[in-house]
Image 1: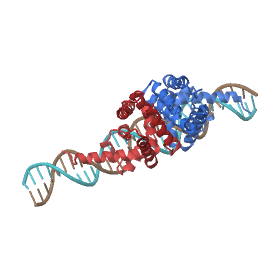
Image 2: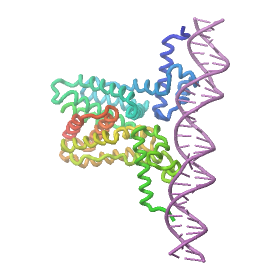
Image 3: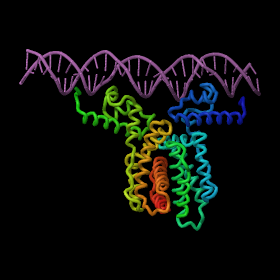
Image 4: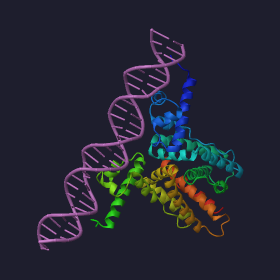
Length: 178
Length: 178
DNA sequence: CCAAAGAAAGTGAAGGGTCATTCATGTTAT
DNA sequence: ATAACATGAATGACCCTTCACTTTCTTTGG
């Protein structure tokens, strides 16, 4: 007989994941202690273990919701809007920094790699659906290269700071048009 | 009056950096202890501090030599060779995994970010020099997008495992030809 | 040429600290 | 009353770094 409802439990989990994402973005996974997450979330040391069995489970939960939006069309304007969205997330929330942490951790952990690879597959699938059928090149290959540029852009936002998306948008269009 | 010559000191430093890179590639920066590096290098606990003042200095030394080779020309063949080189380094030495660690750390440390940003600038500069003057687009913008694809390819080698470079090579050529 | 002094280099045990996790105890809702 | 939930001090492990001590090499005075 639970003292609280499912919605309460869900809200508490979200509270923890939000706090963890904030700290992971600032200090990385290894640089963030459970005490940091607990403080950011306003919980007590022990209570967090009612919602996550370990720090690693929190890392996984943060990585699982790492997906970005997709472009809605493959015009120069839509693609630019998409990159501006990525850029704004990096500026306002440090999202590119978090993504860099996630890739590094995924490179070391098969479990995380599977999660990230799945998200990438989903992104390529969504993109391939937008590519016109009369495209001169194979849609799958175009999607592959498209995602690659987006990753490169995000990683460089993390390392080099804010970057004009124009060259990247142009390149994306060049790829699409073969 | 030093007991050993400069070449000895250099060799010892290289020994440490090589050992550190091996372990960093397997376990990441935070997951590698000084004891791990010492063991890998076949040194004793205290002696490593004669060559590096701290673990962080070793991390910096590893990041400083993270540069990759450049393509020698911008033909499809040369570009493919370059990507195959990146691919082979990832397969044989786990280099893509190490690069992912470096980007994540650079995203958190301004000092490392400066080092990596410098390497990226150098790469773009070298690339821009290869772009034919009659190219329809601006060479700097092309180099920017080119590097972005290479980063995206490397990061995905780290996360998704071995990948055929063909789609990426095609995209690189599409960018170059406007 | 030899030996002993002296300095550089090496060693590994221990200090000082942090961290993830647990658990005995307290609190609150049913 | 009782069981779910919360709390935070305690625990045990790990880790970076230091340092007193040993070994090894160079120098130098006899």
